[in-house]
Length: 277
Length: 245
Ligand code: HEM
Image 1 (tube, each protein chain N blue to C red):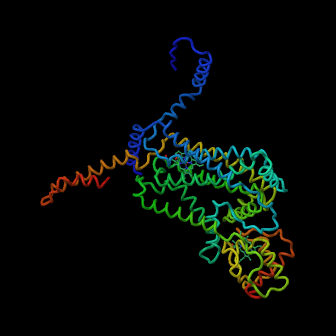
Image 2 (cartoon, each protein chain N blue to C red; image 1 turned 180 degrees about the horizontal axis):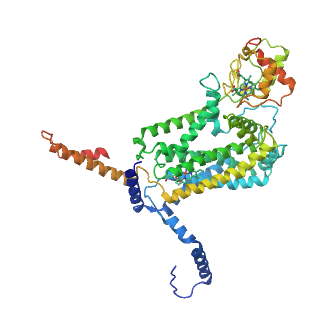
Image 3 (cartoon, each protein chain N blue to C red; image 1 turned 60 degrees about the vertical axis):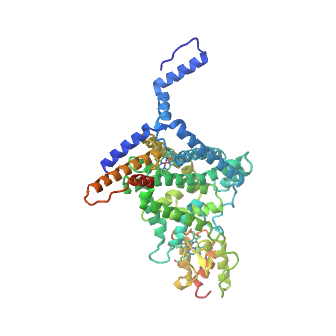
């Protein structure tokens, strides 16, 4: 990095610059960040392409509110879990807000991820070269759903308990591996204290870790391949129009060359162009 | 995609990038606006519609509808469609086949649809699929949201009950069987089969109790009910459609 020294510099500024240069020399963060932020993306990117980022932000919010909830939550089936939820909701300062945000955040995240997937699908953005981006994304969708499933039980109220009993039964009914999956989820043949701790650790550690990993992979592919251009961006439409014009011109030439062909009026190509627009 | 199509795409995309704009601030600005609005919406929802604490767990009774979160309603409704009504619609379709086929389709989709075309109006199959799948999900979720919320309270429209069967019916009502089963038109139409003519199967109480203790999924086990209640319940069920109509 070349710095032109014009006059004496503020020592704080000098020190900061030296520190940044020192770190950049060894890690490349500055160069990397600059490359990341100022890399070009297609000009016509649309508002629909913000949904993936939004899903990521909501996931971050779930992580933060989840950590706060975990400070108070007790995975104890003998009333502890239920009481700690009651305590968070009624006693902890702004506990109701944190719990409310976590609960609503879960629903919103599902909706946002689904809309993001719909955008990718409708745009054909999963096609070459972004197939693997889609696959990592599809795992993110499944993991997000599993987050909802495992989190529901933690409240340990009647609705949650019975819904989860039914859900686990459904997994357990799968042929061959089903009974094993059921035992793994329940931590044994019966629903009980071990089941709750197991769901707690799956919900708090296993799935969030997996989601973070897959978001990392997902982002790696996105940055490496670049975000796709809307298939109907202005640039694309112009190219398509030019191609269409060229095709029509060629067809006209061919028609003229045929004996006994009609002579089109001079205005024909203009009208055709208007129609194609 | 054929190699030529890939090359054409790479060239076209490089062109788009060359004439493009920097990620910062053009994309980041839109991202921040939408993500910010979403977070604000979540906070507003959390403030206006407060979370509740339900009733504490009691594994001995299900006077509660085993109802999942709304985003699993579609799966629950699927269960009702494939509620073992006949050999063509076994429960396993809804619990195993359909979900797994959908998941596999989801994951491998980019290898099924490999054409170079990206404009949705030139991909009628993909467009149709979008409309049908989204429509189905919305419809099933709507069905789930509007499915009978309460297990019918009070008595079932069944007559001829003796003392033990009356007790059995009370057990039936108290344990939320009606949220999955129907008797004489009362209760949910699924995922469990209609029990109006359960007695016609000619099971004895021992067989019924064995079923209640270890039923097939997704029906939960009722092994934690007191033996007397299981006996009453079985008497009631085994007379349905024969002794008690
Ligand atoms: C936790 C869930 C998810 C997160 C955090 C996430 C994040 C992102 C982000 C930040 C982008 C950049 C472009 C944009 O915002 O649209 C993106 C693009 C993409 N996502 Fe996701 N995503 C998630 C789920 C999914 C799912 C479920 C799928 C599909 C099955 C998917 C497939 C893709 C594909 C193919 C792209 C590239 C699109 C393009 O370049 O136009 N993602 N994702």
